[in-house]
Amino acid sequence: MSPVRQADRLYHELLAPQDTQDVRARVRAVAEKYVSPRAAAIANGDERIDGFPRDVFSALAAEGIFGIPFPADVGGDGLTHPATATAAAIEELAYCSSSVAAVFDVHCILAGNALNQGTDAQRQRWLTKVADGSVVGAFATTEPDASSDLSVEAVRTEAVRSGSGWVLNGHKRWISNSPVAGFVVVLARTGNRLSLFIVDTSLRGVRVGLPDRKIGNRGQLTADIHFTDVALSDEDLLGGVEGQGLKQALATLTFGRIGIAAAGVGMAQAGFDLAVSHLSTRRAFGRPVASNQHWQFLLADRATEIENARTLYTKAALRLDAGNPFPEPEAAMAKFYATRLSVDMARDAVQAFGGLGFARELGADGTPGPVEALYPDSKIGEIYEGTNEIQKWVIARQIFGREITG
Image (tube, rainbow, N blue to C red; front, side, top):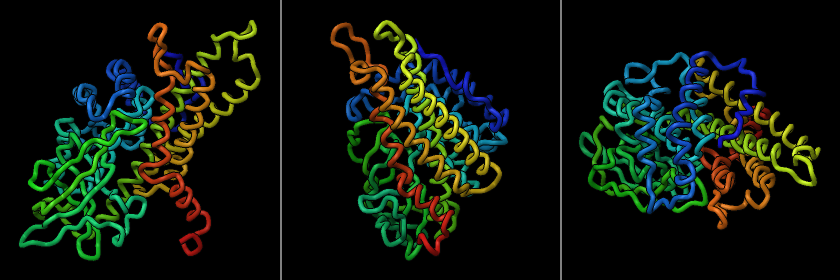
C-alpha cells in the first residue's frame, strides 16, 4: 500500500504556474500506473541481464510524457514554462523510481535540450523522435580523464575536417542510455575549440561497450562508447557552427542540474512519506515510535529541507523559463542541496525501519524491503551532472567573484 503523500498536506504551491501544476498531476497518475509496479524489479535488476526498462519507456512515450519539455513545432506540448514543468515531472518520476527519472532526464533534458539548440533541420530530424519516444537519446561529454573538467585541453575525443565532413575518434565513459540509444550528442575537440556533434549510433565505427554494473540506478544503463574513424557531415554539427560546443554543453548541463535536484526532492519525499507512515503505525514500548521526540524533531527538519529544496529547483527552473540559460546560483544551490538531502533522508528512512530498512527481502514471507533502493539510488545524485563540490565552487564564484575563486 502506498504511503500518504505528505507533500500534499505540508507544501503549499505558491510558485509553480498552472501548466506546471497540471503536468505534475498528469505525470503522477502515469507514474503510479506504469512506473510504481515495476520500480522494485528495476531497482534490483542486473544491468547486463535485465537491461533497459523498455516497457516503462514505451508507456511514458505512449502517454506523451516526453513531449513536456519541448515546443509544439517538434511535437512537444508547447508549454509556457517547459523547464519548470519538466522539473516537476522528474520529481514525480523519481518519487516512484530514480532509474526511470534518470532515463527521462538524459533523454529529454540532456539529449533533447542539446538538440533544441540545433538547426531547424536537426530539430525536425531528431528532436521530433525524442518528443514522441520513437528513439532513445544520449549525451556524451565525460571521458576516462575528463568529467568535471571539460576544457579543450582535457577532452581527448576529436573531430577532424575531412573534405566536406568530419572524422570522429575518441572514447566516452559513463554515458547514460547509450546501450539503447539511437543517437548520442558528443562533445569533441575541433582544433583548439570544442563542438557538439549528433552521432547516429548505427554508423560504422561506433561501438558501445557492456553496461556498467552499479550499486544503484540500475535501470539507467551506462556504458563506454568508442568512436573509430566515424564519418560525419556538416549536417551532424550541432547548430551548424563550429566551436560552440562548450557553451551548448554547459547550458544543457545547467538545465540538467535542475533536473537532478528535482529527482533528489522526489526521492527525499518518497523516503519521508514512507518513514512518516511507518513511524506513525509501528509501536514500541506500548506507543507509536513517532511519539519519541527524536523522530518528531528529525522529521520536522526534513520536512523543512524538502520544502526548501523544492522551492530552490522551482526558482531555478522559472529563471530558465524566463530566458536565463545559466540561472545561478539557484541551479547549483538546488542541485547540491536536494541531492545531499536525498542521501540524508534515505539514511534516515533505513534507520526508521530498522532491520526491515536494511533488508532487500524477508526470507520468512518474501516481504520486500520498503526503502533499500533509496539508499544506493540517491548517492549518484551527489556525483553526476557536476559533483556537489563543483556546485559549491559555482556558488562561491557568485559570492567572491571569479578573480578570487578562479
